[in-house]
Every structure is written in C-alpha cells, then in structure tokens.
Amino acid sequence: MPRIKIGTRGSPLALVQARETRDRLIAAHGLDPSEIEIVSIATTGDRIKDRPLNEIGGKGLFTKEIEEALLAGEIHLAVHSMKDLPAHLPTGLTIAAVLPREDPRDAFMSPIAKSLAELKTGATVGSSSVRRTAQVLRLRPDLKTVQFRGNVETRLRKLAEGVADATFLACAGLNRLGFADKMTAAVPVEVMLPAIAQGAIGIEIREDDEATRKLLSAINHRQSEIAVTCERAFLKALDGSCRSPLAGLATLASNVVSFRGHALTPDGVHCFETTRTGSANDAAKMGEDAGKEVKALGGALIAF
Image (cartoon, rainbow, N blue to C red):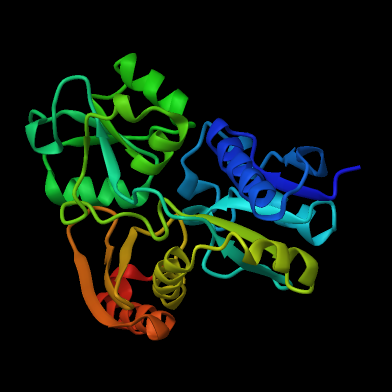
C-alpha cells in the first residue's frame, strides 16, 4: 500500500517532474520506492486539443481536476509546472515546496532560421501562448502567428512537418526531457521575458496536511521559492492567468531580489513594464507593488 500518492498530468514532461519529486523524497527520507505512487490525472487542457487555450478558459486548465483529487483526499500532493497555476489557489490548498528551478528562458525553434530576427518577412510562428504571441508581434509585427498546441513532442513534430516556420518552447521542458539538442537557441530574457514561474515545479498540498508539509520541507529550494513568490505576487495583483499576456522574472543574489515584469496587449502594440530591487524578505510585497503599478499604467488596455 503506497504511503504517498503523487498526482500529476499524464504528459511526458509532467511525469518526468513527478518522478523528480518522488526521487527527491526518497533521497531525503530514505523511503522505499514502493511507498510512493504516481497517479496520472487527465485535465481539461489535456482533453480539449482542438481549440485555443484562451477560448476554453485560462484559469486552472491544467490543474482543476488534479486539485479536485487533492481536496477529495485521493492523492497526498500534486506536482505542477508552476506557470500553469492560476494566481489564486482553491480554498484549502497551498504550495508547500518549490523544486530547484530549471532555465526559465524560452527556446527558439526553427529549421530555417537561427533566431527570430533572421526569419523572413511573412514567416509563420506557431504558438498557443498569448504571451509569446504578443511578444513576437511586438518584436516582429511583419510575421504571421498561428495556433500551435500540444505537448513538447507534438509541437516538435508539427514544426518538422512545416505547419510553422518557427515556434517557442520552454528551455526547462526541453532540458528535463533530454531534448536540449533540439533547441535552435535560448532567447535572452532581455529579448523575451518568460512566463511567470516558468521553469519552476511547485508541489501543492491540502493546507491542513501537516504530515505531508513536513515531508516536503526537506526538498524545498528556498531560492526558487523566493523568486516564484515575487513573480506570483505580480500575477495575483494583475489577476492574471494563461489567458493574459503577462511576463515576469525574479532573480536572487546575496539575498537581494531583482524583478522585471510587464503586461502586453494581445497584438503586442502596447507594453507596460516595471522593475523592482529589494530584500528577499520583501519578495511578495515587491511583486505585488510591481503588479499594481503595471495595472495602473495599462488601465483598460490590460483589463484581464
């Protein structure tokens, strides 16, 4: 009988992340592998594959069913790509740990160009991300954008089939799946700011489950937690989701957090940006203040 049940999506990347969580728990507590079971759960975002994400609702598309299983006591913890988590978690749930963050940058993928700047006028860029689409149009308004959904393997196949001339994937996902060699180039964050919490794995539990919280405290990565706390406070202040063209990245050095965040209009014409620097102890307040500033700057143009 498994002692711990880990809930996750069933995609190859999600399962890799769940196994990393399992392996870290085994190493931290000397558990036998038979004590941990990984439970695959299909989500709305997994089932509906023929429509853009922003048409089927952006909040909780890849988390709702997993969180329902968590609240029902069917699993002990849920492993998420933190960029998929909406700003507000369901009542009774909390993030108990963040694993060491992978590379937060976007990866440019193309068989015909080495960078976005090298694409010819009128070239097609495939993406299901409203953030990436807005950023591409801001940088290259001469390009065409098309919907490009699916897991990492599916999107790589579509690119090879010529559905688009280029696309973007998260460096973190490619690295975790062992596909780093398929990357054309990592995009500097100065060029394309990543999604909130991109590259971070968050572990969600029931708020009243102290036993699981204690187990997870041993594998929490404090630096990643601080950065993600700042970024998600920015997201929350803007009430954003994966339907919102929002981007933000916090970095930590010597207990000092540096944050940059922005909101765009979907067409990329307008971008409202701010930066913050401060103590790690004030990470949440920094993110919140930055979000409030961007919200005031953007007004009705970024009413998500």
